[in-house]
Length: 122
Length: 124
Ligand code: HEM
Image: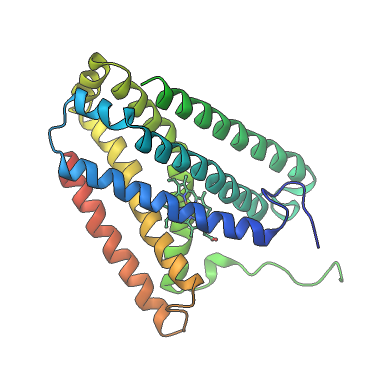
């Protein structure tokens, strides 16, 4: 099997499956949030806070956050390997791509820590 | 592989099918959402952090610029979601024929436009 140190999982197929599963989880979470906003117009702070203080919703949010990180990492990695190539950028392409991927990872790491911190400080 | 084999078809001179445009837009919208999550998390953080924060966000969301930015991010998300569902359907073998492709692309555009307009109505 071909392995690639810069992909998310051990193989492209694994990435492909993770991206699909995470897409479905994100879809369900977005529909859930949409339902909340539609069914509760004029929501006040207490109600908004109580929603996320609920443990089931908190864990659901955590799962969505994890899915987002996996999904976006695979997506941004795919984009990087499509466009930041030697054919497009010449000799420095590998460095540029690596830098871009590091930046994406850093951003996702911040999103993750920040998200957890928001959810658990309620 | 020969090094001097002809490469690069100039994509700007090729007339692409509609599905090609909905596909690249899916990619672009994914990147917009990736960046936009920062703003959404910030709104989430502020609005959940305290009652003042919550009211601050309500107050801020009356400004046209804030409305436009949030609408932009949510529109990108709506498009990415609709095109993503189409992508998942096609992954499972639905609508993969040459005849179905432009139909799928049109449905994607139509449904996402409906959602984007609905989001605009909701935000304004
Ligand atoms: C919520 C935040 C989301 C972010 C930041 C995000 C971001 C991305 C990015 C950057 C890509 C790569 C695009 C490409 O390779 O062309 C991607 C691909 C994809 N996204 Fe999302 N996405 C999100 C949510 C969703 C949702 C809700 C769905 C729902 C169905 C979805 C479905 C997909 C699919 C199926 C792909 C694979 C496309 C391919 O293999 O070419 N995404 N996403």
